[in-house]
Image (cartoon, rainbow, N blue to C red; front, side, top):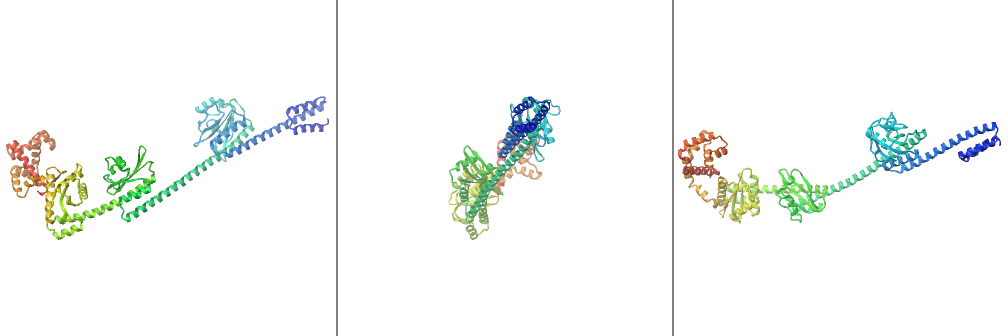
Length: 633
């Protein structure tokens, strides 16, 4: 066999992708019966063939690895979920390098790393571990931005390991570890690590292979993150669009409600009309209450249910400082808003339904509540104008020089039928009860078909075709056990303005007597206080003054001259049955002061003033003095 034939034989075998065994057999055949020169040439050619075979196998392995990387890149490009990308990369890293464990650390905060996923681990101890800056092999890889490996991780003195990482590495029995950075351009996303459960040195080709995988993984990871951000942004955009559509629809609904309410008010609509318009807008029955919790709208099936929720509280107390509120009771859902005016709560608007009341519906309630406030304010303005007209009429009626023609003209202007009046009521308010007194007079007039007006510090009610006893009973019902004023009721049986003045004076004196008798929250007919009115008639007043002067005049004059308080001391002392301790407590004085004052009273009234008869006369004189001073009696 010539050299050329031999060479062609070696090349033919290599071209035919002969195995190493076939190359060995070919070498053995050539060496058989070969001389020294031929043997040397055969050995040289065989060595060259082995080198070429190694190169071919390396290239073939490289081609397989590149094909695997390309296939992996295509698969990773189809993944849109970050967790799927991480898992797939770990699985492929184990297969490409033939290692026991592969895991990925991602940047956590500015400097830390967190193990997000692992494949091949014996448990879950690796997942979730957070590494500090430069901690472990992963920390060094992230810092330097290049691949690093350790033949024996747990025994490598170069590495700094915290207790959690040390525990996890020991539990997983990690030996050789190779780590490569996950980078996109110059940004480090994390670290991909491949580990063996025994010491292992990683070749340059393995380092390059894992680095190639990490490059594809980093791009896929960034794409997945961008896709997730895109999906999240798209979802947010869709939600924003839906929210915008809801807002536009809600605003349109609110504008439509405002327009409907505006048209209603232009046509002279009232509170029940507002409730009807609002009910159509929200699709729920509506109940509107006034400041006292009384319905201002026709009854709806839910009225009793809604009123029961308020209980004894007024709308102002129920809402407190909140303009609107929603709440639930079992399977029933409610919403309400307060009707607010500058001077306080004027009522509330309530709805009830089987489903929770949405915020948009609550805003519609607030729009309607504002319209109710306008309606209430308008009604109050009209009522106040009428009240002023009636007040002017009452002032003219009670003026001593008011002519009958002028009074009747004012009565017609105020809408008052003077000839139909049968009862006059005077209300003298208790301390701080002026507004409540005016409201009571207005309610009394409204229920009995009469008229009311403010007069002086109190109020007057003029009632047609109603007898005084009926009026008295109605006052007690309206007061509900807590009248805000002393109320005098007098009959008026015609007589024109003069008869009205006389009836008013009788009612005024009755109210004043109630106050003087410490019954400032009571009601009485004129005849019920007849004995007092007789005593204080013009004919009897001179004798009463003389009696008072003779009995306690020296005490009164002493107090006036000395600015002392002997009259009051005497009154309290006798009222407390001459009990010293209770008198001191009532007057808030020391016992020595009381003894000193009583001695002075004895000097002025004489030694026997504490006896039963004298004490009774003194108490009667003190009471008469109070009654004489009460409202110019």
